Length: 76
Image (cartoon, rainbow, N blue to C red; front, side, top):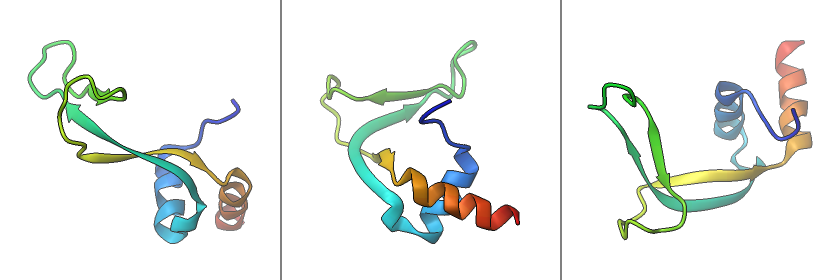
């Protein structure tokens, strides 16, 4: 699927080469810890409706070509 990346591999790629990140937005994020059906759900306030201060940086765009180059290098 175009635009989806293996999360753990992407996190490692960014740790190794932070410059592959092209676009980041700061947003308020909360993880539901008490819900019976929603426990572990990550809620992101993308439009600032809660009025809460941003507490996370969301990675919205990466250098795809460089990411896949790193992936190919790691699996060889």
